[in-house]
Length: 253
Length: 253
Image (cartoon, rainbow over all chains, first blue to last red; front, side, top):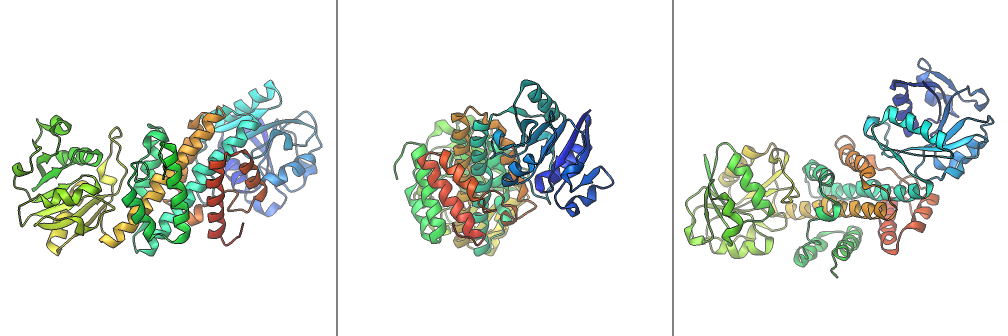
């Protein structure tokens, strides 16, 4: 049984708490949050506290707070010889300032409070300051997910920005598609199957192989027509991404 | 039974042919392609020809060729009083130059020859020059798909460019994510679950609601860190899309 204390009350903390409570071989012994209201709902399931001095004994302390708060929170953990990990994709191992041992436990997924998440498919990227801590983190990761990867701080920085491209920016392109539909009285749901197929396709083809469309096939007439019906802002994005696809396949616009 | 002749041998023609051959209440009586080699494999299943003068009688003639070839091919169909449709998202109804009646039968999906496609989930966008032809097209569409929409030429133009954003450009962002992973010895498969979740999430939340990430939460420190590790080309795209997300949520960069 791995004893865990979780610190945080945001989206990731919320989903991770529920996952840890349900997991076999893990005992979530306590949840800390600086405002008790946000974790009040856990009262019947585990210990809760808003006082760092009340933290109880555990094997791993998981800090799931915003990136900027990790250093400060970790510096206030006064115990030694425990494993303290953060869950951030953007922060290095070194932002942890506790006197304890250190690690990273980064579940690479997008979390919204209103959207249920199945952790078993989420890649958990782990890093630790020692081999034995890495083994402990791997054990924790494999209890809740099928996919565990050793990713160091330098790699994680790059992985995080890659995730911004394939998640944040992709979602924003969905939003632009949605805007175009709304403006022309087209139900956005028409685009949902192609959106899903685009995501699923790259499980069997690389994105390089999967590319289609006017920019890929050098269809200047369609590109010109498209630009003529976009607003200034959309056209700027259209032009840059079209140029980028051209460059990828060795053509010039 | 709706009798159909299909004209074309590309990706869409290939998938549509297979779908029509398997469909109930549709008889694919002939497939035409200007080069016979490409459709030779259909010989045992239906009539094939590379000569437009040999086209046989049918209810609907479906032109599934590249956008630029639709006008020319349709102008060579000399019969009258038949329904001739094209399958293009980018071309207006009026590019059809046959003496016959006209329509559009546009399956909104991304087609690669090597990737199997289930038509039953593909939205079919139809348009026709008369109410009775629209009814015939709707009958055809509903035979192979659950989703059929009336979309006129003006709307279809916008829908097509929206599809470029959510499919072509999204796939290109996947490619950039893949490049970043390759360069840093990170397996790209780590990103597949977040890619899929991003696509599935907007079935229950709008893209506007689903947006997360540093640009959305005004996290200037992370944005600065990201920019510092991207190459010039990636940084240009990162900066423009970040600016666009800022503008969407009423902030200025």
